[in-house]
Amino acid sequence: MLAIESTGGKEIHDNAILNADVPTIAFALGVLACRDMEFLWDHIVRIAEAHGIIASGDSACGFANTAMVLAEGHNIPRVLAALIRAMTIPRSLIAFERGAVGPSKDCAYEGPFIKAITGCPIALEGAEAACAHLSPIGNIAKATADLWSNESVQNVRLLGGMAPVVSVEQLLYSTRLMNVATDQGDSAAHMLRDCFVASDANLDPQAYILRPDVVIEISQVIVDAPTPYLRTRAAGLKALEILRRAQGNGDIHLPRTEAKWLDRLSAQLEAVPEDEAELIAEVVPTL
Image (cartoon, rainbow, N blue to C red; front, side):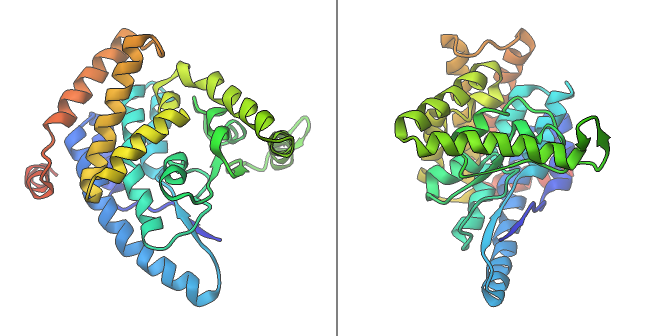
């Protein structure tokens, strides 16, 4: 299976994250990253077919997971990381539009949306990926996974043994549990799924947007939009709308500083033009 963490547009996006610059984030993800994905995945699918291997999927790790790690270190707002996660979905979807068949790459936390839209299987990581990065979504990522993975593990000695061996044991136990729940039928599988969701969803906006019902809601506006850029804009607007609604009805409790950022980000994204050429004309002179 051939999968990749492609990074077209990342140079622009990294700077935009640190400045909470939503128009430039929209430009990097909705224009640069999407165009790069179209070019790249036409080649990847052709190469995979020529060598008899599976064109699996892409990951927005270099965008959304970068934001997640920055938020975990209190360098950017968590609501900004949640917004970026939603806005990366269309660029990863392009791999499947160009011929990828899954499973999506394990560090692609946009996988649940890809699965909702395409029906393709997805790989995910979470709690057992703490060996490489901390996150607020370690359990909820398990709710919709078809393939469960860990992450990069340094080859250092722990009390239990070498770290890669310890990490594989943790991964094995987690996978056994999910397999047993699946084998016991829908009732057991759904109960475990719901526990995974409930244990994370209300604690962080990044987790909340991975709730299965929220995944469906955001996926719908992506499907309804006609172009990758408009999908990117629509996904972000819907994610912010959902987070404002969740804050209002008490499903999540954002600190005052995070709530202020939710309003700021909404105002910025609503001001981003619907016309892609207009956004390009606005952003390019600032780079």
